[in-house]
Image 1 (cartoon, rainbow, N blue to C red):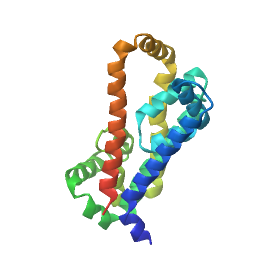
Image 2 (tube, rainbow, N blue to C red):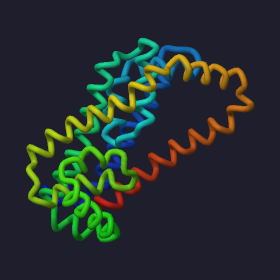
Image 3 (cartoon, helix red, strand yellow):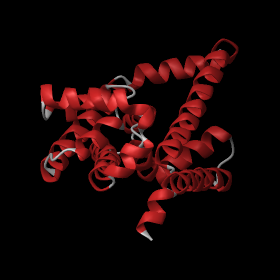
Length: 228
């Protein structure tokens, strides 16, 4: 049964992500508000922390920036937002760590395309030790590889969890606090963009397209990595 779940983990992850997106879409449609913007704000107010936790598992900074803005406007609590986002980031890396710890043969078989990245991750761990757990959150392309790579070694699971939790909360604070502190300036830019939509529209399309593309690539990459 466990082996079957492992072999289909990519499909399971894809289904979970799709269910979550459908849930958000349905909740957005059913929101008792008028315009789309009001519906979206209502959705964030109602399910904000759940959305933030799920988004943080994927370590998406955009969700944390939104949490910072909502904290600035009073729709979320700043400290709870940092706490929840940190837990999400922690949970995501713990999942990757234990994939490496309990599925070594599976990882070696299905991550052949990432051999160089795994080799680099091992070198970084040997050179820097535990600080690499902090650093990996800011290393694009290595966020998934490094926790799995550490799991493949004899590194203490308890020590990794402790450092990972501290790292996740620091990452959440570093990302959320600037958006909270500069919230007024960011809202001024957003207000200007709404009034001058013909200038801002191309950037909005670009940002929206980038978000959609990011989630598409993340989903496909995880499905490709975890599928046998």
